[in-house]
Amino acid sequence: MKSTPGKKKLQVWLPLLFSIVMVIGMVFGYKLRDNTNTARNLFDFKQKRSPLQEVFDLVTLKYVDTVNTDTLGNDAIQDMLSKLDPHSSFIPARHLEAVNEDLQGNFQGIGIEFQIFADTVNVVSVLDGGPSEKAGLLVGDKFLKVGDTTVAGKISSDGIRKLLRGPAGSQVAVQILRKNEKKNFTIQRGTIPLPSLDAGYMITNSTGYIRLSKFAGTTFVEFMKALEALQAKGMQSLVLDLRGNGGGILNEAIEMADEFLSGDKLIVYTEGSHVPRQDFRAKRKGLFESGKLILLLDESSASASEVLAGALQDWDRASIVGRRSFGKGLVQEQYDLSDGSALRLTVARYYTPLGRSIQKPYDQGIEAYDNDLVNRYQHGELVNADSSLKAPHGKEYTTPDGKKVYGGGGITPDYFVSADTAAIGAATAFYRTNVMSNFTYHYYVANMDKLSVYKDAQSFARDFNWSAADWDSFIGAARKDSIPTFGLSTKDKQFLQQRLKALLARYRWRNEGYYSVVNMDDKTVAVALSKIK
Image 1 (cartoon, rainbow, N blue to C red):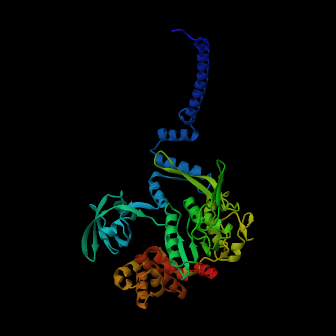
Image 2 (tube, helix red, strand yellow):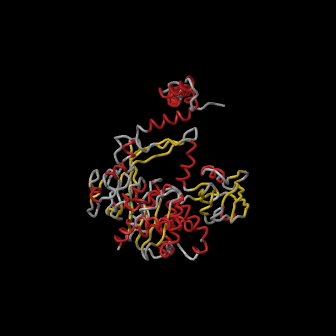
Image 3 (cartoon, rainbow, N blue to C red):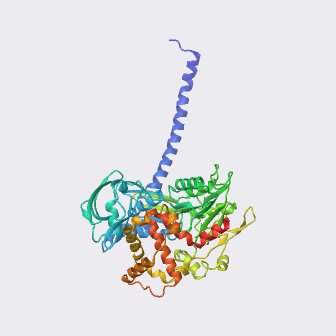
């Protein structure tokens, strides 16, 4: 075949093209080798160990006595984190499952609540529609056996919990005592919710009440169901109770804020030295963008609770009633470690829409930080409005309506309500034993038929009253537990009777029953309702 002029030109240039390709390949090869060596140096800890690792290895190999290396390593990590901030923490592997359960909002088990009275495990609540209800367990049942293990007698709460829990779908055989008759059941374990929503009901004809205990993975869904149910009952105003809510998952609070704020209003932004600013805004039409809204806060309301409160206060969307919140403005991310433990590391601060950081100072050390609430009490801040107003504040900001708000040290309420410390008084001794829960549980089991006439928690809260004979019986039980009952004031007696009534309601209607009773005499709730009027 004859060669063409084009092919002759290609043959002339081909050696040069091969040479260029080889040179380029060598350059990329050296670059790739350098990058590979760099990556290897970053992760090859054998080349250069830190002094911490060297000391740990020497202690493990040479120390005179046998040491628990897990405990030693965990303590070293905790000590290192204590030099950072109060909320970076190490979670040992044995505790991680329980911690994650609380945040994810469920666990795997049989769906009961139990309490140990006189060394006997008693069923005090059965989850509606849960595995135990389906199997036939009732409030008042007493556990005799779980599997082949006899539990009647001395057993700890952790011990019975380990026996009852297990993977969803697995089965556990139990023997219980019901009214002096032994009964056997086989229960198929399932996924059991850990609700964030303690209560959601109409506290007046036009005002709804919702109480949240935490922000877990299911909180927003629970909140939306309650909100829609209350709106269907004619709710026009809402009291959202975040007292005692220590926070949790930030996104759950952001999603909730979106239901109250219109347009694309800024809800919160986060920023850290290694984390660029990230804005979180309202992005949809909310279910409750208008209508009066009151938030209840106290000194235990923290983190995600403060995110929600800060956003609504900055936009003049809600009035805050109660006491200054905890003051946690740091964001943690959780990193799972190779041994099954986890590290929760503070990676950013969060800021309210006006730019407020509400993180209280921690430069005086962890102990001073932990004692902050004690100091607030000792300085009168929890019981005196003037002391609360004089509490240390950070930079001043102005809301769109002209209201003054502050950064640093928590969310300051618009309306202060003192802590009800006087109500406890001489009644404190009753909380040191199980006498209150013991009395109400046995009263409930003995009077189920009598209590069944109440159709809901609200009617029970309104109409049930302890008789003189009931009170005498309780005082007798307290004296058997060596609790001093002399010198109880009228206020002490009223406080104790209300708490006993709330505990009784809880056996029938769970937490909603408890708060339906307690809220009837709650000063903070009363102030909230007055502001709505």
